[in-house]
Image (cartoon, rainbow, N blue to C red; front, side, top):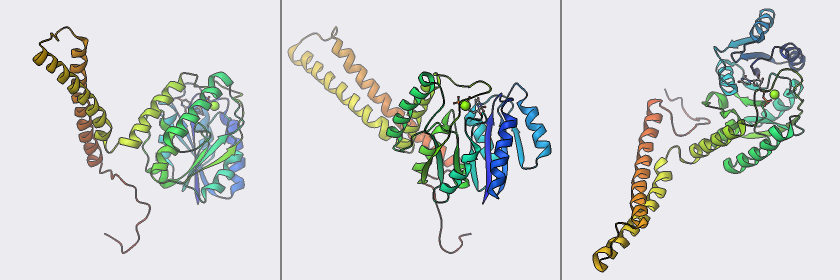
Length: 315
Ligand code: UDP
Ligand code: MG
């Protein structure tokens, strides 16, 4: 088994040396072949030059430098694309995770495909970080049905095939366990230590919570309806259209048989609106269906994931 460590870094000049030393100490104990991929996410401080210096002395280090700041998810994705190990471990570059926890994750990855760290005693500010994260974790667990205590923990281990089958967008890295588990991936969790950030600044604040909630909606939608959008939009559209039809019918009867004037009645507006919305929603569902087909067929992306094929070689 070989190991790749992926670490995104954005303006972490004060942390890199210590991180590198701690990481080396832990990895050398493992007696495994490994590589360390430092991803410089468009840092504007000395991060890149420090990394280059480390790389020039240590051939187990790979440095990827992104042209600008693309965000942590993109930095992870870059690391994944270049990682060559059978198992890929991710962690933060600000020393809030401890490389000494890596063996724990590797122990569990033997009978799992993905192992997530759990910062049980998280050392971040309460109101801006821990409280929103409690709410977010509860929400994500319930909406995605994947029960983890701590989605936001960067310290995670993945089997190679899990990560290579995944496409990451936006701020999605925290949803990898949820997305992966729909593919039938076995997800495990292990308690890890967490330290306060001693050097450099945190790149996130409370505004991140909103992004996480929006991403959650996307993830939930994709999980439930990505291959059948008409099943999502269709029923809502039909209910809306049907209600609109009933209202219009009632108004028509009123006008035709009882001769009452319906021109100024708010109900008329509502009826017309519901019919239009209904038609629009069904139209959106159909458009969605076309998109799904274009998406899967243009990329030859199957709607299933195969674990193994047994039998005579097919080629
Ligand atoms: N990071 C990054 N790109 C960004 C923001 C953050 O690569 O745009 C890195 C950062 O350098 C650190 C990790 O992601 O290694 C976690 O960031 P941070 O410590 O700021 O997040 P927090 O621990 O406060 O959630
Ligand atoms: Mg941090």
